[in-house]
Image (cartoon, rainbow, N blue to C red; front, side, top):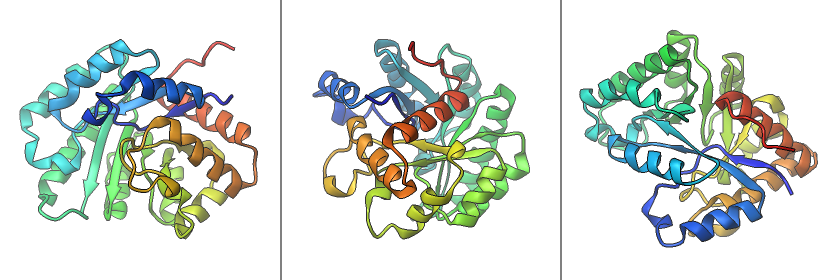
Length: 259
């Protein structure tokens, strides 16, 4: 059985309230042993902290998501450093830029993003980055701040943008979208990229795999992503599982599992 880390799962989502125990058991039965749970706004930091304390192998990241820009206040940014000092915190996230959804203030997004990048740098923590229709600016901003490491989750950029991220020491997170046969660009990236920069994720409860379209996503389904990536790279699932798990352990400072 593989030892997998779901590096991006919103397990604090209310959709998991009704079957949380069963959901975690299905994940473990599938070989998913650990999870990174990123925050989206100040309102769910306590919920994530409680979840991570209650469940073994669940690790928190705290940050302010660009889709929730209207809810973010300067005092939330002021509070963030203290939350990052709490035991068990592994990253700053989910943060970034989103120029796809209409009605989000781009200047406020930039302000919140840049400040969180500096906070991450000061705390020597990796960042979990959301970038949608904003790849070039996201890369430029992170390069300008400098001294950063992390992952661009649910990567959907070009091969050249992926190369720029690798050169900066950034990983890319791959989830359900790679299982769609028409996702040619991301499939090309995954097939050819250096394995040392690859992470697996679900983004649960969102972004289900192709044959689960319309369903709630959950960590157990990351095995579908694993099998697709292994096929694209013409490698065994065990080899991909081992490499991506070690990548996640290095990036997030997680200890290896016994044995």
